[in-house]
Amino acid sequence: RMFVTAEKFAKLMTLLRENMELVTCSPRNMSKLLGKAQHQFRCLEGVRPLLVGFDRFIGGPGSMYEWDKEAEIGPHLRSNMGFLYQQLPRLLEAGAEMWPMDPATLYFRWSRGLPHPYGELIVATWDASVKGVAISLCVRPGEILYLEGMRFEGVSTIVTFEDTPEAQVHREAAGAPMVMRLCRRHFDMRDRTVLMRNDC
Image 1 (cartoon, rainbow, N blue to C red):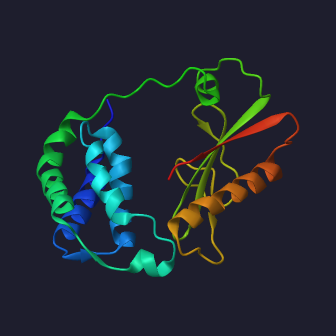
Image 2 (image 1 turned 180 degrees about the horizontal axis):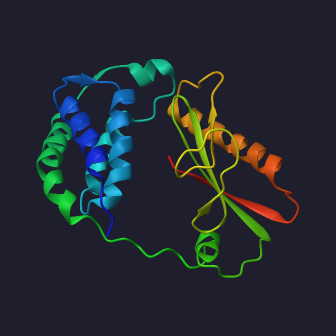
Image 3 (image 1 turned 120 degrees about the horizontal axis):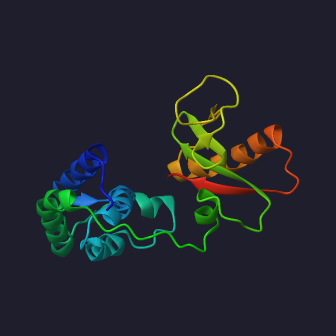
């Protein structure tokens, strides 16, 4: 079964409580709560349909002005948030069924040492923060390559930003070319495939 970590769940509940106390809210702020909920609700059964109200509130902002324009939180969404705040702690302990990985995926075959038609595989996983990007490279399952600079547990290397992108989604996207430059520097890329995994 899949479970939400206590630390991540606490952040979700804090954000939910803060939004419950608001009279008005912007789509930008509500989307922060929705983003965390969409990710964590994979590990909590029976609550994903309640996210529809958040989607409707956010709508489709077409400009920075619309992203930051405050609107009143309606009674239905407020009721949803109250219900979630009451029920989520009970659902946390139960977790959710973990769906079996599709055996047709490349990652599934690589992780079990099964043959695949893509030559030698480099599995690159990265996660971004305000400071930079942590990158892990593996050519064999469970064996992370340590490359250069200071050694950090669980990652191959850390690349810092010269100019930090303002939005987290842009910081995550910036990791992809960093991964490829790192692969080109350390591997002969002929007959190799890079499987990119953004752990955002």
